[in-house]
Image 1 (cartoon, rainbow, N blue to C red):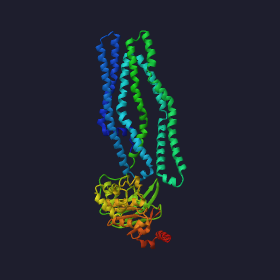
Image 2: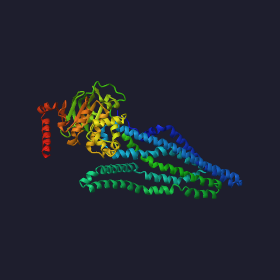
Image 3: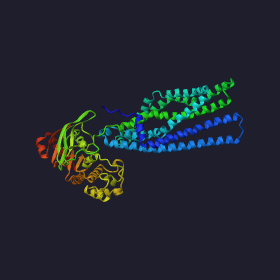
Image 4: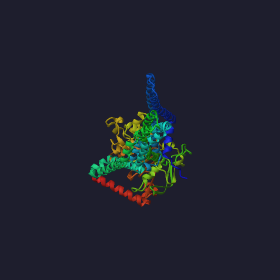
Amino acid sequence: MKEKKKSAVSWILTWAGQKRIAYVWSVLLAIGNVIFKILPYFIIADVVKLFLNGEKEFEIYLAKAVLIALSFIIAELLHSLSTALSHKATFAVLANIRKSCCDKLARVPLGYVKDTPSGTFKNIMVERIDSIETTLAHIVPEFTSNLLAPVVILIYFFLTDWRLALWSLVPVIVGFLSYFGMMLDYKPSFERTVQTTKDLNDAAVEYIDGIEVIKAFGKTESSYAKFTKAAMAYADSFISWMKRCSIFHGLMMVVTPYTLLTVLPFGAHYVANGTLAISDFVICIILSLGIVGPLITVGSYTDDLGKIGVIVGEVAGILEQPELERPEKSKSIPKDNSVTLEDVRFGYHDKEILHGVTMELKAGTVNAIVGPSGSGKSTIAKLIASLWDVDSGSIKIGGVDVKELAFADFNRKIAYVAQDNYLFNETVRENIRQGNPDTTDEQIIEVTKKSGCYEFIMQLENGFDTVVGGAGGHLSGGERQRISIARAMLKDAPIVILDEATAYTDPENEAILQNSIAKLVAGKTLIVIAHRLSTVKDSDQIFVVNDGNVAAHGTHEELLVSCPLYKEMWNAHISVKDTVKEGE
């Protein structure tokens, strides 16, 4: 049975529950704030009665004035304490939500992350989560407490004169009707603004990331037009929404606060015909002024309440994504470092890519996976690295299904070096240290010497302290690969996956890189995805993948005889190398 998704309110309560005590105190202080804000109305009413009854003692009026001042001071103090508590709790909660999203992305299949534009994740994890701050920091303590004030004032109002109490509600009712007019089609209108904001973020990120290609091919105008179109759609979504709401909003803001529009004429009429005492009339005037303030405060948060369902829905969309199936604690211990694929099937977006792939990679051997572009080679590597889960079949390490291994135990087993190696916007030293956070600077230097990148690192502006830029953009592709191999060497995992790890290497440095790889994989189980067949011809075993199936496997010599596809690929590779040599 499919698990029922949590509502927005359930998520809010779950998040607020992380700091339950702080929020409870915040609400209690906010209620105290409201009580002390209401108190002056009762004191003023008492002052009016004393004045109309002929009281002339100045000290009595002074004492009442001091009480009113103290009430306002205490109210502001309680408000400050309430908001301080709620904000401190809220920012801690928002940090936890962001951490949860980051942790979630580390546990979900890579396909979900790849299919979602980075601008969308940035928008949700920064702007959208920030938008929850109003709900948690203000609405939780203030919305509920401010509802209390008009209720108490109205009760006193009705006890004083029920007729004027009803008349005072007329502008409020008009305001509520205007508010409901504003809320017509609220959800689709807000969802449209959310979508256009996403589109604008995605267009901006795409434009900035692709600026090199745009300039190189003279596509500035057409690419900028896409960004402009997204920006105009974004602006239009807000402008059209605001135009539709402006009349209702204007009516609500003009009419609602003026309770005196009905209280003054009808109160004067009741006084004139003798059904209302002048003292009670003055008290009713004062009370009518106290109804709307808290209601406007409450109303200022209703927009945020209207949005919260969509906002929480986006954040929950990340947190509710299905995760890779892994236990907290490994169910079995692998007997060795062999890797076995048994009838593995896998697809993207309901299109099957791998059709029952079976492989046996023995511990301590060098295994190559080759084939035409789009045959499924890299997909196999990513499945072995557990970046996705198989749709059916199994992948085993040392006879144990990877789904029975805890993430921590599995990660210690695998070192994965991809074609597009990502480096953080940190120093060279810290990027290498990612392979083993507990390593020393001396060990980092030693591993760079082994991986053949010590010399070029020392030639950088600040050596090991050189910041590599976003995604390693300050380095060449080959330099990024060599640092990634050094990082993998530092991890010292028994199973190493090289997914086109020499793709960006020029012939001059290929020998250095191959020597580095040889040191990296000594005595380990190596899985190499390669286009350059000459780099894997000495492998213990070569698997030829074609159209999502294993077409053949064996040594280089065996495949030249038994596999026409491999022989064709080899001949094409040799002819290209010969052409390059002739050109030189």
